[in-house]
Amino acid sequence: MTMGGGSFLDRMAAAGERKLVRDQDRNRRRAAIERAARVPALIGAAALALVAWWLSGWEIWPWLFGGVGGLAAVLLVARHVPPLWRVTAPLVVVGLWLLTYVDPWWWVLLAGIALTGTTVVALVMLRLRVRRWRTAGALALGVVMIAAGSVMLVVDAARQQRQTQQELDQAHNEALARTLPHTPASMVNFLVEHIARFKPDDRLACSVFAPDAQRQFADAWHVLDCPAAIRAMADEVTARGDYVNNLSLPGQATTSNPDGTLSVDACHLDFGGLTDDTPHANPGPQIGALTLRQQQGQGHLIIGYRRCATR
Image (cartoon, rainbow, N blue to C red; front, side):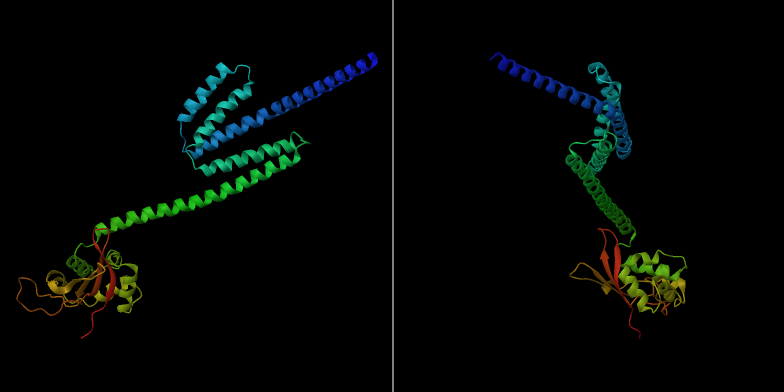
């Protein structure tokens, strides 16, 4: 019994010694990993903070409150922590705080980069010989996160670019609408003015035509584009002063359409003048049949054009 009892106690003691050795080995390995991770963690935290700072538009408050405040808190509360970790912790706080200012897909991308970098460090520097499948899975997850974050950031950038372009187009349309003639009569007067005083570099005359109407205008006058059509009409002006100053648009020339547009018959313009009883020959060409649509509740744009029938 004594021998049997002694043998049992010996086995228990041996098992305890083996457990103690294993625990010591495990602690030494953890300590080695912790020491090896200090510098890479500091570099990673600093990189995260700087990249997040750039992405946030150089926000300064996280550095003042998270960085300086966090460092002071660590120095006061965690004096036993190694110096490198004391600096790393505030940098992580600053980086995470700055990330709240940026697109969440940047979080995914940066997390994927951090996970991939950490896994590579574990594979190369620490020479891990256990949990290889877990390490490989972490590496694959990091790569997937990098790919997903990159793709979604490209998609978001394209969406934001479209939105910005739409806002610019809207602002342009509103600005253009304010400059367009507000009545059919002022539209006809505008065209007559620019035809009579044609200049080769005048682009304003064609700004009152929508793209389709510009094409119709050019085709009607058998020329290449809208400015050439303005020139063709200008060539028919025989008396510039009478053409501009004696013009009047008949009151029945404008009709409203069911779709909200206006049809303007500018093929029967009167150049006699309101106070001049002297008959005048036509000092210039008739404008044509115009279809107008009001823009943004402001001026009108020519959306359709038809040349006057020749007599």
